[in-house]
Length: 289
Image 1 (tube, rainbow, N blue to C red):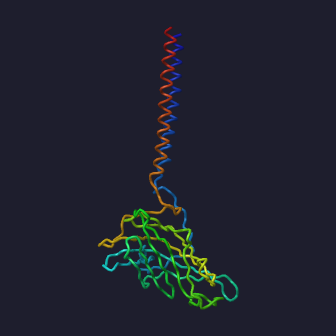
Image 2 (image 1 turned 90 degrees about the vertical axis):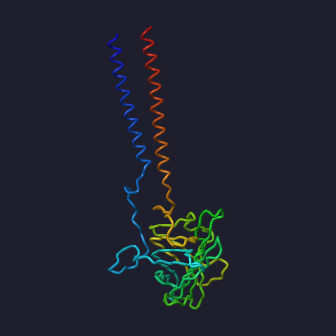
Image 3 (image 1 turned 30 degrees about the vertical axis):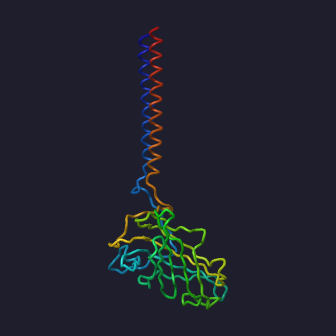
């Protein structure tokens, strides 16, 4: 009888070790899944409307393919800073009744102007090759974040960019949709950074009486941007990165999921241990009787 009890105890202990080992393995897997290291994540290939500007042979680097735009306030301090590889594409109809596109890069040295007077509103305007692109920056209602509220693009439908347009000599004004009032929201004091290509679509407002039928798309690649700076140094603030999907990256979410799974596994192990303890005690008590 005693030998059977010893054999049963060994068998039970062996079973316990296997169960606990499996639970510990599950704990390790849960923790590993919760911690997604960016360095080991495969990035989705970037699909672009266009190829980037061709940098000079002497400088194959990030700065060579992007343009830097700096707008200073009246006191000489930088208020808006933007670095981007940008393209503007306008779809129009020609005299053959075909829908075609005219493309032009955002240049390195446009005519820059703007407003940096109000504490909650800033405007940067760049003019080049008969086009006028304006971006309106605003602060959130609580003042803790900034974003682009509006894009505006103005030009003539007879611009040399358009070959044989069906409706020449029209003054065209396209804007970003009113239902998308917040582009690139970023905490104040930080700079928005995104290497994923961002696209902004511009239409003619419904009540504008526009007759051109034009639609424009602004493609922004390798975007680094900051408004409401007001720093003597005029340098970038801490980076606020976008994710591969265009949303904003929160590193705490994977960690929270992994931690929750780890806690669940630990509770399972503790509960199983407590159940085994009382069961063994009960068996030993019955044997004594």
